[in-house]
Image (cartoon, rainbow, N blue to C red; front, side, top):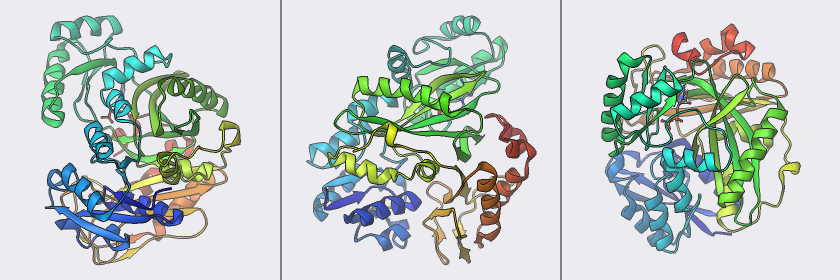
Length: 443
Ligand code: ADP
């Protein structure tokens, strides 16, 4: 096992990794920008290194600075968290080239899955069902027209290098295709420096259901159940649950079998998530994230498995030590992503936190790096807290979430707590009856 790990991230996820390190008896090194000198992850880590000015490209994305910090402090491995460098194959290679361990999949798998077109062709070859669409990159507007006529409107043009819901444009009909094509390519070029796009049928009432997997370096692959992440705004997840109210354990296990077989074939390692759209009883793969997900705690709640601990153990070469048959799911879990935003307009609301009182009690977990007096910097993601509740049943998890949101006090900045409170009162949500388009109409 490692003696020291560097955490190449900030905020709640840096804390999450720190906690796993401490429980495993591993020393931790935090890295931070000058804007984060007072951040909680810096305070809780055993050591910390300043890696640059506030802008992420100069600090949390500054590969040489991060590698140097690891070498100077004698860390043996780097956990990238999510976002930032977590899905950067060149970074994973650079880490390994310096005789450090990247806590995640191989650079090869990051690269395959990072290009959504290659990811889809790979999964197609492995027998995983896909959303109907173009067989690969769209070569031209003319090509887009031909594919759209075949799969029928509405269609979605998506960036091959996509992420965070960017570079994605809908064309409801032939008249809208040219604009969607142009806008998607321009957005993809600006956001990812790559204007390659592909096409999918735009599904009208799907749910977003994803499967968490863990794979060790010895050929064992298991799934840790599904998460329903259909409650989204601008293609970004807002509230997640495990399991999905829409599918049965039998459906989940059948999907799990297909996925495990596919991942064994490609020799995948460490944690990963396969994202699917689910409509009319069918699953269709959209992408794979080769990292820890923001919403991983709901899977931890229902399985009792510490996913970050498992990531670290796997990276250290330890076998999983259990099989699918040993994994049991219990109860239901919800996660509310609380952001520093106006709950009505979603305008960012950075600033100084005056009061911070997180909820507690049975079945309540708060993952947050906030504290009273902390200044939420304007430079990074607006996520400030994840509130997770677990109950024996879905109604119990909902009741607990309402109670926990009621207890949660964050003053000095605006937060989306009131939005979550409204969602939890909505009859459609209570009935578990919602698709990826539901929240967009609700807010
Ligand atoms: P990103 O990598 O940018 O997050 P994804 O491919 O994961 O992009 O899609 C993000 C979200 O966009 C999905 O969860 C879903 O809500 C919506 N979406 C993606 N593909 C489709 C599709 N073919 N039809 C309808 N909605 C889609």
